[in-house]
Image (cartoon, rainbow, N blue to C red; front, side, top):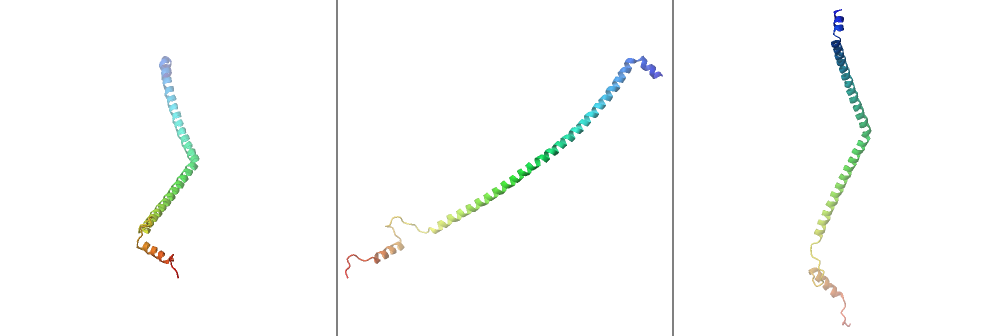
Length: 132
C-alpha cells in the first residue's frame, strides 16, 4: 500500500518515470528493428550479388574466350611474321652470293670469257670475198 500512496501523492514524478521507462523500451525496440533491417539488407545485397554474378558469368566466359582467341591469333601472326623475316633474309643472302662478278652493260668491256666467246663467234662466220 505504501507504493500506491507514493504514486498517488507524486503523480508528476510517476508520470515522468513511466514515460522514461516507455522511452527506454521504445529505444530498445527501435534498435532491435534497426539490427533486423541491417541483417535483411546484408542478406539482400548478398543475394543480389549472387544473381548478378550468375547473370554476368556467360559474358565473362565469352570475354575470356575472346581474349584467348586474340592471343592465339597474335601468336600465329608473330610466328608467320618471323618465318617471313627469316625467308627474306635467306633470299637476300642467296642473291648476294650468286652475284660474284660484275655484269657489263657496255659491250666494249669484256672479261676473258667474253673475249673468247666473241672470237669464237667471229671464226664461225664465212668470209665475204672467199672464192673457191
